[in-house]
Image 1 (cartoon, rainbow, N blue to C red):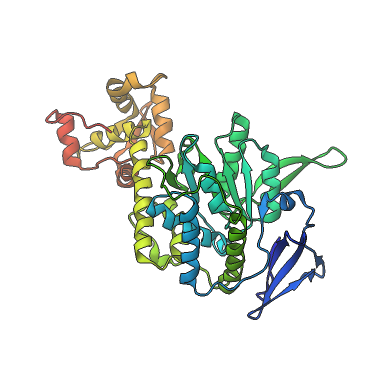
Image 2 (image 1 turned 45 degrees about the horizontal axis):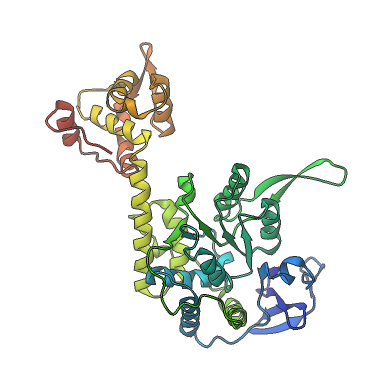
Length: 434
């Protein structure tokens, strides 16, 4: 439970395990105090969750115990990275990214879009240890796994508005997988709740909106089928190298206390920086697609180290290249390639859909497990926002749509050189693949 009041006062819930008590830390005019309750702006009284709350008591949700001095921002970043390095084996680039992502979780509500972190690898590659280590110092981290049912995840995210740490996020059953994909698809943009049908005491249907926006760190064995979701992740491939010898096999008793001390320092950091955090739009990379810029810029906005910024941009460009390469193997890419070729001659005002379908069948028919019909090809063209119309009883694509092709071809990793297309069409070179 947290609040930012109209006068800039920040309210955060604390949990002290040694006394099994909860309270509020209230930051106002540069000073913080501890309070058992506070008056809301609407006249209501806010009280913290009970220390007997199962999520808090069983450490499924991790909270700070009190604000602590962190020295300088540079020192805090060093402490976070040293903590991660001590307990998990990450690539140097991802270790830096994870360090800043931890900081982003404590400021996330200053932004409208967020990236996710993902650890991908087979069992025994250290995914769970890494989730526990990074998650233990994130903002109001909530731990769940593929063995969990989905409903508590919705309720906990809505109640605490913290960081979801999700292990084995592949999920066992297709309906659970679909539900978690809803959380991940809707949870990186503010203002898009997930609607779920609930029943009231009279057993009447009562749809409820669950707020799922917030940072998320997930571990999976494989990728998701939804390529839009895939573009939201900054991914570390686990198990790609031998484990460092200095990594402890078992967590020491001091781990929990070290993590709590860092959470306490990060709480004071949040108090000092939450109202200052904002998007730096000068960091938008014109070479990246809008979706990738959307998720990357919030993280770049809190990074001052230019070397780390370049590492993040490089990772984003790798993600984009992978997405473009995969799109290039899809039916849309096959059809676009043919359209570019057929539009190369300057004297054709229209392209019959039947001609596009005929070439698609000739070149790629064996790759499809469905009939290639004019209607199906026309539906894909319209999905690509290319206008078709009926002329003399047959559907055609006007050459006037040529202006849309450059962006579409860039998205699917295709060339739009008309001279090359003419050479292909005339048989001077072999048909280019995708």
